[in-house]
Length: 190
Ligand SMILES: [Zn+2]
Image (cartoon, rainbow, N blue to C red):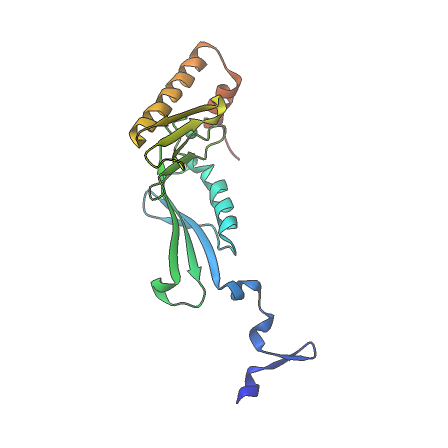
């Protein structure tokens, strides 16, 4: 009987599910997670927008040098859909050693050809040029270093050179920026 689907809410007849949260109307949740080297997955919760899921993941990856992580993903799950049909992988990142700061905070998106160090005071990056896909941009913001190269290997080499220069300059004289950078590597986080 049709009337069984309705309930009296605040003096009005409504379908019983009309008072549920906004999540039901979008029907999608966004789940960031990371995979440890041993295969153990760590979930960070599920979120109502992709943007919030990204913020949560970025914060987590900023401390990824304290763990041995291999992969990070953001997956969209459609609510009430059974099995893999309800799942869409939006982003897959692979954890690497940063060519500049040498911490395991360099996260590479192989599909979109971009990489970023999430470690504090570093932010070394590599990205395919939006103007010309044949060109790879790379940079290191603390020195305002920016260079265009032909391939990804060359970009790594440029950043490794920066890393070596920075390390050498610490040996010679303590530059404030680089000193902070390398101090943060050994920082004890409570
Ligand atoms: Zn770095």
